[in-house]
Length: 246
Image (cartoon, rainbow, N blue to C red; front, top):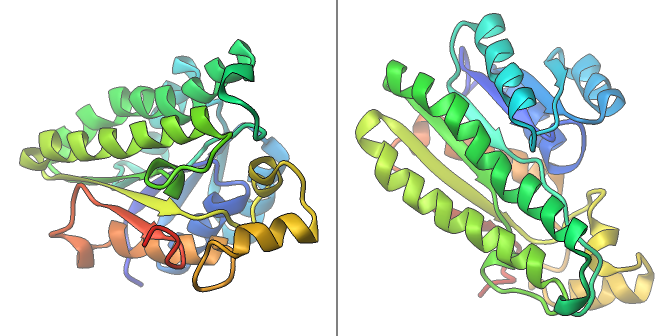
């Protein structure tokens, strides 16, 4: 029960890595609010775990404010914010990505972290405690070709995490990130372009451990980084990648 008594928000908690984090946090004693734009997915995970849920588009300031207000109304405080929601784009030449798709990547992968910080950080400062976990990616460390704008968004997340950590440490707030490799989530087919045995084999050949990351892998890593066991860890972007970035 490493998160006993702690309250958390997990964005994108209705599927994939976010669902793995929600399930692990609840199992370790946390009270969790799932924030997801997919109502059915959020409700499914909430029903299975006992977490609360709220429909949230993390790229919209009004939705993010409602998310923060709801968490503090339900829990009275907030110990952990997990900025997990994210999107990708199909592999393609960097000059070919439509502008609307680029804008959506910026809004969900980058701006959402800014919007959440505007709402949550002042409240964590007032409490002199808190942990913010941002979901980055191995794409921000060892980028694959034809995914340039997704790669760039995750590089931004890593830099933002490090800068936030330095600025917020004096206020008792830790900021960390996770860099998963491609995993068994709804985004896998997007990264590969097509989900075929040949394409899976090509991706797996770059991962020394020989498998994709799972929601459970990310849940375990997130639980450690957000627990008091990691009290001296801030500013890290920890690879959960089976050795891909070595």
